[in-house]
Length: 438
Image (tube, rainbow, N blue to C red):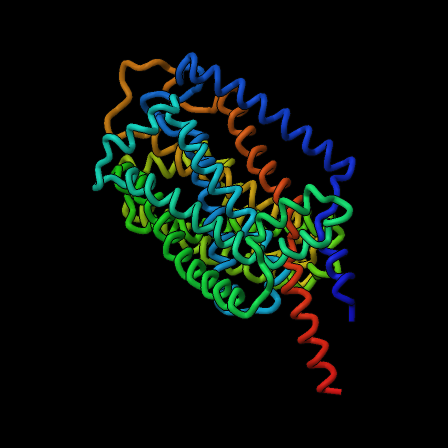
């Protein structure tokens, strides 16, 4: 069995490598480009985008819904695993918590970007209407953000105290920061009881908060009574889709962190096998809701619904539609049925496919419906009959994704992505069990 010092040395944060520094540089360049594009958008107005009276929601809202979905699944997965006390969860939960925090922060920023001018965010508070889902979105997002922060922070306290001591001689300044953040953690029985109780309360709260957040976002669409959105199925449809997007993101992130940090001994093939089964189940459930969402209108379609479905099945958006359906759901389900498909490398590429398909899925949920209003489009510019993001929109969206990745990268750099104290405790328990058996 490894000693305590060996565990700490393995799991303590390491310096940035040369490749990681290049990665950071690329992210910063993308973020700066987005800042310049956004400043021009604020100065010139939304005319620099291709948004208009019909396509009033576009790539920004697609990105917002994707971030919300990713954040929800990370937090929900962590909450469920913490409440059920599954021991295999230890190497995974902190990465999931970090993803959730980065995603929910960027969801809040993205919705402000979509408003055009940041000062308009105040209008959602000053002129709030409690019967509007937008008002409840404004309330639930900050609440959810705080809950996720504490879900990450409270379990970190023992590890922060360990890192304070570990870096006391080699990096005293860093040690000082870890000491402040550890809140004078000594590992006493009283502290442990308070910590465990706090984690349990937050884990219980996160689940309904996440469900409420996803459902409110679904209501933002379905309450408009537009073709393609006017469905009572939209709440569970969004939640099941969120699990696919979130688990796919978790798989990709865990694979990269495992490879870069050299954590193959702690994040094993067994963990990827379990996540593969979870992803397959999520894809199956979402595939069912997709069939329900499209087949029912196809059987009893009105003229407007028929136009909308034709646009998706055989029309302008058919390439994207079949990519997200077959490539993002059917193919992953088939591959994940086999054990080789749940190996780390296979899971990484399946996860990449699922994440890409999940993002484009949000795009085709938002865009085609808006371009088929109830009233005919008459007397409007020809460009308004279609929508594709402008360069400004792509640059700002890329900057949003880069900011989320930068937050994730920095947290992974300075926090132990695998819980040190819990890993040590579980190793001791396992060793004691083996001694008793022998």
